[in-house]
Figure (tube, rainbow, N blue to C red):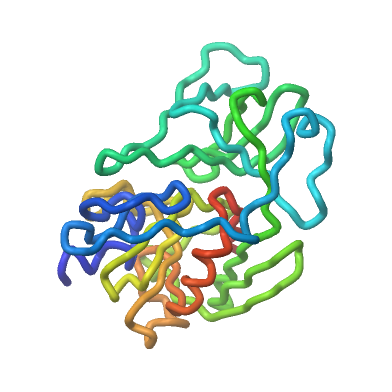
Length: 261
C-alpha cells in the first residue's frame, strides 16, 4: 500500500500528514498540501462553543449536558503534577509546516484558581493541573461516543443522541483503544481515500509508537472505501461515511470529549 494511503487510514492521522495548508479552527494543515488548493476557513456559526466570562468562570456551573474546554492563552503553558505544585513542565503548542496548533484541553475537574485537564500527549489519558488564569474557558454541548462492540458512533448534544452511524475500527492487532479522550485537531483532506476531513484525537495507538513519520496519534476520518464501514480494518483510527465527517467537522469544536468503549 502506498505510504500516502496509510495516513489517516490508521495511526498518525494528525501528525504524519504531508505538506501544508490553512488552519481550520486551530487544526493541522491539508494532508496533501503540495498538490492541493488551500482550503477556506470554516466559520464558527451557531455551532461555536459557548463561552464563560472571566468572572463567571470561578462560580458558574457547567450547563447540563455540556463539557468544559480550556484554551491556552499563549503558545505554551505550565502543567503541574498537582494543584499548587512546584516544578512545572512546559507544554508547547505543536508546529506543523510553520503553523502552530493551538493548545486545547478537556477539563476534568476544578479547584479555586486551578483546573485539572487531560493532556494531548502520551500516555493515553495523561492529565495535569494548569492555572485558571492561563486559559480561557468555553463549553461544548457535544460529545462523541464510539461503541466498539456495535461498531457505531453516536453524536450527543446536551446528553441526547442526535446521530447514530456505523464505523470502521482498528484490527485485533492494531486496536482502537478504550477510554475517554478529546478532539485535538481538525484536518481538511484533499485525498478521497481519507475523506474530506479528519478529527485528530488525544488517543494514541497502544501498539504502534510511530507510523508513517508520526507518533501514532489516532483520529476520526472519512473514506472513499464505504465497504470498510462496519468492519475492523484500520490501524486504530475510526472511519465514517464522508457525509458524517463533513457534519462533524462543522459542529465539533476542539476539546470536545470522545468516549471509546
